[in-house]
Structures are given as C-alpha cells and as structure tokens.
Image (cartoon, rainbow, N blue to C red; front, side, top):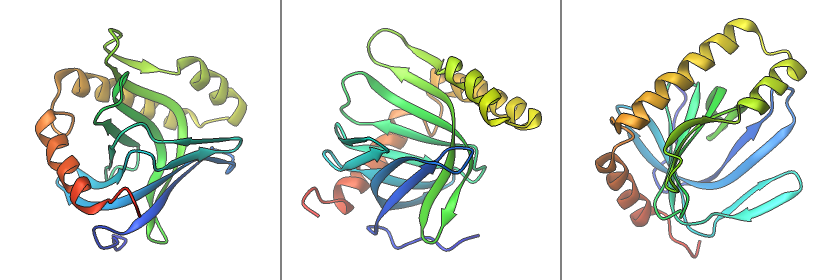
Length: 180
C-alpha cells in the first residue's frame, strides 16, 4: 500500500483519459481514511480545471477513493443540483503522494433537481469505448460497477449516507481552510 500524506496536506487530484491525455484536475486536501477508503476534500472556490476550462468549485465537496481503483465518489455539501457524482474510473490510485486516475466517461449521479439517481454519460461512454478501444473485460466490469453503485446511492447505504458525509465534511472544515 502506498503511503498516504498527513491529513491536511494540500494536493491536486489529477484525472487523465484512457490515452493518457490530461483531463480534470482538482485542488484538494487529504482528509484521512476509513473502512471505505481514502477521503479528500475540496473547499468552496478551490480550483478545478481541465484543458480549456478553469472553474472554481461550487461549495464544499468530499471525494472517496476506494481501494478497488474503479471509481471516485464525490459528495457535494451545498451544490444546488448534484448531491453525489461518481466518476467511474480505472487505475484510480495514489501516485507520488497524490490521487490520480483514468476517467472512463461513465458516471453515477444523485441529482437534487427531480432526476433522482441515474447512470450518466452513456453516449460518451459508448463513443469513447469505440474511440479508445476499451478492452471488453474492463467495459463489462465497469458497467457492473456503475449498476451496483447506482443501487447503493439510491438506497443511501454507507458511504453514500448523510452520516458518513457529515463526518467527512466536518473533517474538511477543520483541515481545509478557504484562505490557503
């Protein structure tokens, strides 16, 4: 197991695409670990960027990086439209003291605007599956992961429950100052 930074350590969570091209980067702070995996947080206004786009975060968020390396699950505290946004990924892991992963274009979302819980970006998933030539066994596995996560989010099972989120949001408030 790769050593983790000390809670409170600032870092950048870097995503890339299957072909290695850069994707989203999120300024984050390491919060700690629990039975579900490692947690990082992002304070309101911290930088998120991808090639051609720089956007400050909209409210505080926490992200679970589970040991499976198959997703990163973000829970938003005050975002007006999205409570849970899970990026289905590949090789999501620690590298050089920071989280990194391959964004596989498939997402599980719990929306607050009446859409409920759903698997998102199926069109992008299909397009990129062909474009990048995702291996069939990985496609099958990640589609299964997405369906399982959709069920867990809909049922609000831990770590997608309010109590787990409340705990990690408190840690974020204690460790991640807005003026760093």
